[in-house]
Length: 296
Image 1: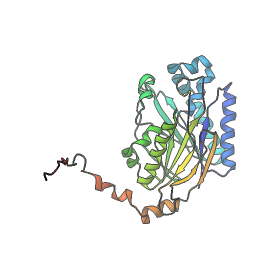
Image 2: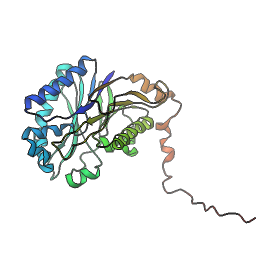
Image 3: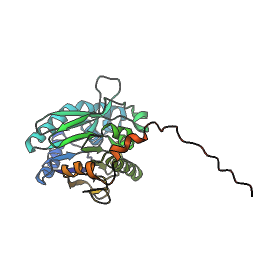
Image 4: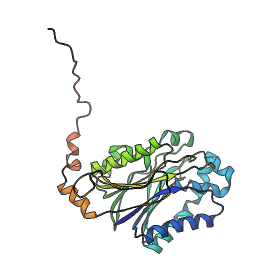
């Protein structure tokens, strides 16, 4: 299969039609390049706040509500494009008020048949906790698709190995991210690569890039698209299947052989998935050994 992962530049949108044209252009470009799975980043939907004007986009709380209100319309557009081009799309995550007092950070996976699956972020960053007040949402899910089993770890979630372990049966781990600093990009990238190593799968990272002076939430963005596997049998020795140029908008493409994932799990030089349980029960079992000097 061929995947396309985005380094996505958010724009100040003059109208809904401008957004529709932008998304359609992105999807068409990737589909015409042969991609079957398109991955957009975390919080890429925040550009929708500009549809209510600069004042709304700059207001942290108001922007949450504006974007959340647009999500059904956004999802309908993604469904139409996924069906038109015959592709799977991970829509850029968005704050969504779903019955609670505070929103969740939600990504949506759309299939070529028009099915929509949702995945909420599990662990919030400091900024999401305060001042934004984003809350953890529903549980982790594993999506059965024609491309294989797909799991989603939104940005910060990728840095926690037990979340990755819960999705150990995933063939593909999608990691949509939104990181301000270069260090943040590398934390998520290292997390995505570590999860691919541990679960002997492929992780696909998307990023927001560029400056958004109309927003206090996504004002600065550093990142790149990347596709990673275990540095083992059938994969590059670096584990890097593809990586985009840092902070350059556009698609990064990679060819993924599902059989290679199955093969490395059966015959790889290491067996992280199989040996994982050998760690269990060792928490707190460290023996402290005082290094006292011996008397001559």
